[in-house]
Length: 425
Image (tube, rainbow, N blue to C red; front, side, top):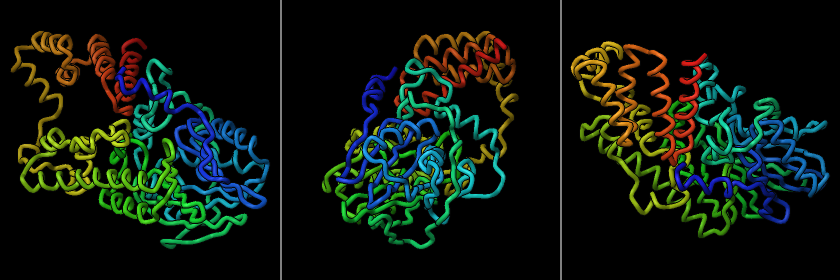
């Protein structure tokens, strides 16, 4: 296990954190945070977690503070880990459910109503988040949330919005609490932030969390506009909040600290876009840029820009494809051989399957796991036998150990389990 990940369980210890005299954060109970604002005669809940079980646990903690009824549920964006416990917080009442006008009816589809490869997305989502992996041996945390969260009732409590915000800014008073709702696209196009001016408190959704941002999710997403996301960080700073309440990870306190953190966050996004553009203009390919572009040390060392959730090389690739498409500019890439044909020719050139297997074992023993995987994949393309599947599974598990990026770690381990199951049905 990577040394930096060993502290994750302690960081995500469950607690109810008081952010203001009437605002509370439920932290560590689920993948995402839940916020409760206590008003005159009623409560406002912001985001509702990924499962009804987690929502029940959070509501029970909130009920130790107040027994006022929930009058409004606010959803900052469509993602399932923020919307799936809504029915629990609604209890037996009929609270208003408020979201952006861009809010999707289907958390998996996101900002589109057209068909998508849902089975593929579901499988990749399972791998990214380590759903089904054991805690704490295989899953420590998800990068921006705890690994030991309850998963029963995932997606079960989704409620449709009863009111949608369609203008850039709208102020609404609920139970004597005046809140401003501001459309703020970033991680998703439907993001909306909540500004509580009286408390100088900003609930930012997933536009910020304590990790390099997930500019591309390996579960599969449409292009997340990096420039728009960076512009939204400028918007968040314009409020000059004294409390910043993110969709994941702990809240931040203090105007100066928040401003510096958000400035660094924006600069990290801008750096990726600028350096990738420069490289593209210089004729570099997507693979060359993914391997060469790194955050400057003064940014990379910041704890809120460590690659626990997003990865710099993933972001570079996403920006390249999102702005110019899959073709990397190299004419050789226009008509590549099929994977099986390329593998057959590669193995023949290397001196046959036994020679490649010797190279795999050497790479494995040397800890050169990426090269070992690329070699074994060629063998699998030509001869997908059970021994090779088990070999790849072993290499994936070994490669997972040194990953600081939780989605990458989970993907390796989950795929290893799938290969092992396929080899021993």
